[in-house]
Image (tube, rainbow, N blue to C red; front, top):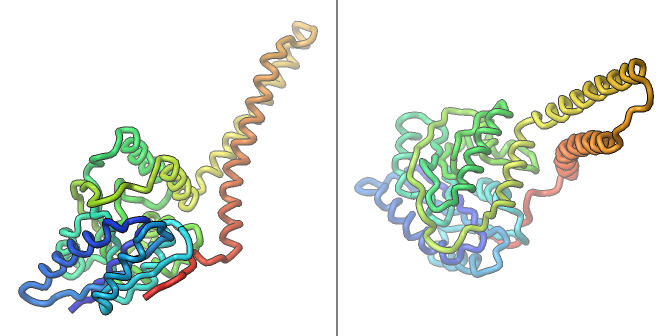
Length: 313
């Protein structure tokens, strides 16, 4: 039998946890019929929830102490930290990452398992065919993000890829060997390489509760991914600065030639103010890009832990 560790990050998901366990248990049972094939290990990670999420995890652990385990953070550290904590706690031959809201259909697990076992894949990821239930703006921004990051980065990230995936032990150990504090898992999963394939599926509605991601958080997460896996913004700042410098030289030559040929002082204080504001804006823009990279370096050099465990079983 193969042991499959299921990593499930949770934040205020008290309603979803029982439904998730019931649904996945049925899938595992079907995989073990008629011949026992897999042994499940559930790793729930409580990302500093303020509801009864931890209580639900404890109840499951009390009922199934051999298969259900949990880790609870001292505060909210974010999904990336919860994902890292879950991966580090796994002991299975294979590891699956799943969202507790059941938007990632557990029914795909048997097919993912077969692709790893029979076709030799190290990772089987998933891709949403369409984004049902999302606004057109949010869907457009999500699709645009993948186009931008794949244009800027040397690492190709599958468009509309989900965190939902099944991985071999070697693959997971390689991901965990990357020590960075600022983590963008979709990029890390692609960066490590290995033999990978993707399954497409229709998006599913949440089983319970509401999403905790808003546009502001998604935008910040996108910026994090671009900075973590591309230095193109720094090169952009260099080119913008160089272009501004060349334009100022051209403007200076124009002023000198006009003064020599026409004479008199050059009029136009409003235009001069506009140019000064433009150049100042470009400088601040470039400094802002540089500041983003410096802030990431600053956080990395602190060597703080990605998360703090308050309680685990």
